[in-house]
Image 1 (cartoon, rainbow, N blue to C red):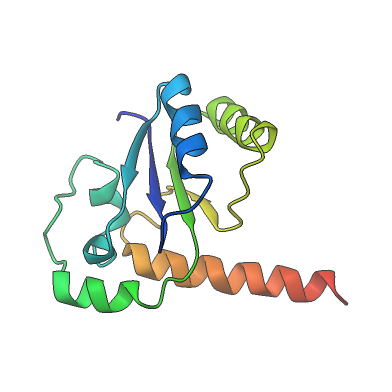
Image 2 (cartoon, rainbow, N blue to C red):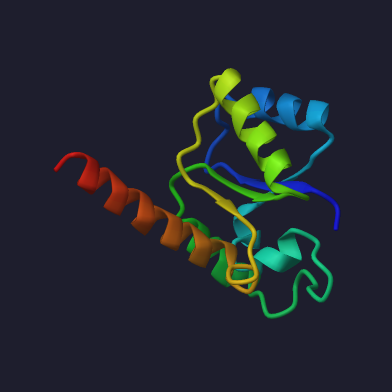
Length: 133
């Protein structure tokens, strides 16, 4: 498996160029997720063995689902915990703030990108509400 990061931005974000620069310097492939790809499985988007893009994904449904995604999302598929820590440190140092982040796992690789987004959004809102209590 080759290291990659799936990145979705509903509109051109000012930090996109800086993010891409960090990933290039670290040798991590970036896959920009298009609105019509949000119905694809995470495993397929990340290029994992056993997953094919376009299998079971409805592009028109993906485009409709993408309308629900109003935030930047970063999904990381890295070779080790150390690489994850290095990437997160580089993002902090670069001033890049993307609250909705996930790591590809055995549990979420079968989810569609939109399903993962919805789960991340729920978790983020739950943590934010607890922080204000």
